[in-house]
Length: 308
Ligand SMILES: Cc1cc2nc3c(=O)[nH]c(=O)nc-3n(C[C@H](O)[C@H](O)[C@H](O)COP(=O)(O)O)c2cc1C
Image (cartoon, rainbow, N blue to C red; front, side, top):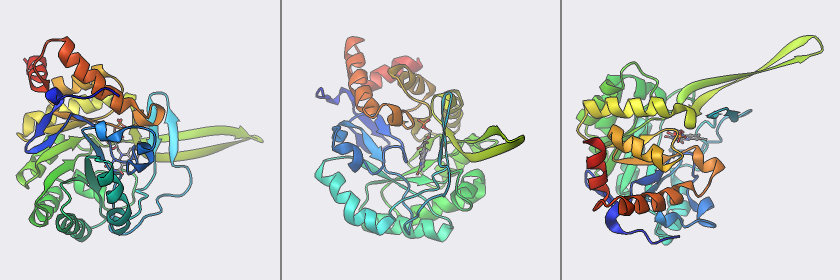
């Protein structure tokens, strides 16, 4: 892997990352799985899968459906819980110099506040609040779709957590400008968007003269959602002054540049990791080469020209 120079460095409102290419929550595990065969320390950061107060087994039955331009997932926030994460996952990240952002999710306001305090006590540098998962029965989605509930949640988390606070927004709302603005007013340091769109698939089979239907509902992600994500980033950007981290369907350097042009300061790669596990590392190198080849001094200059 090529050495990446500081021309790709990005300053997200005080959080300085070596480059703007991150991996998206839930699509890169806790990074330890990848680290055995890929140099994960090359990435701007890894966003961990959502961590909850207690371990969760996740949803039963069908969890993943492939679609023509992405996938529908109904994982249901399976994770080891915060105690195990702190005890056994963080040491691996630290020992391998992997920059990470911890994605947290709760079913109640109280759970989010407890998680925020634990993160603060353990000096977790940056957290991403998942207020937008579409495939759990209660909890985080309700906060993400209601402006005042979101304002209250982010304010309460802010009171307990002094590190870098990212709020991850759902596209499943009427006005993402309003939820973004509520997060900013409540003290978020950055917004990330988008989480998955609501999706469903119905597999139809005709067996012995009868239809058998298998319905899977969950979060739709991948290449097919990129236009929705670009639109969301542009609308969020028009509503807030804090940095936006763009997520949704990114597979190529052209996609990354499109998100920068829309106003994103950094990006997260999600579903593409499943088909191309080294895609994020490759994009780091491609971005660095592109900046040099095009004669820009650094990433900031590239973004400035893209937005001119
Ligand atoms: C299998 C899977 C699991 C996910 N788990 C989480 C999660 O735990 N927390 C979260 O905030 N987002 C989660 N997401 C959403 C992604 O982080 C990302 O926002 C979304 O997939 C859009 O990006 P993409 O089109 O590049 O995949 C998950 C997505 C997938 C496909």
